[in-house]
Image (cartoon, rainbow, N blue to C red; front, side, top):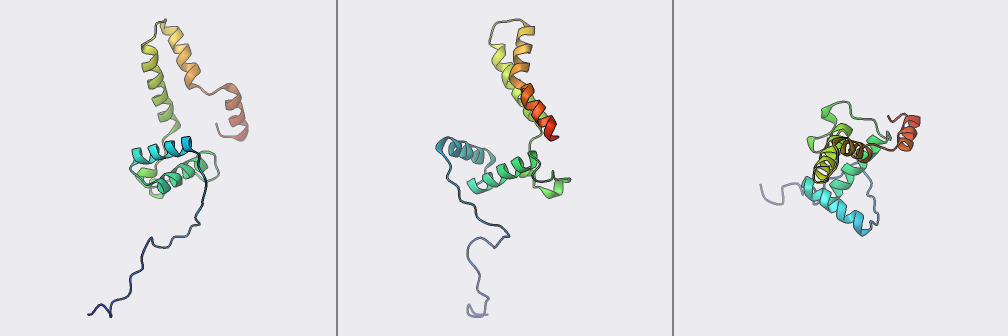
Length: 129
């Protein structure tokens, strides 16, 4: 078989059922996006897709995936409980360096890691909590 007999290969990314989105992003947001992409070992466009998908799911614009097959392991969103536990650990380590009673530190930690009542009430109205 000669090179003339082989079917011609197309170049570039294979076609997908999607539309490109172009947006201007200011520097602080772009730096944060690049840090996220680097931590996840993914390219910037994939980072934008993951962030957008997670936001749309968390705000109920997209249905929550029912099974693990619908999203790859890298796309699995972090649960709210995990985020809260991580925040509490960070606050605890910062508070450990400060003077004060255990009760004072617990009150401060709760104040720093809990959502304000106005936001919780708004979410309850929307059925998000």
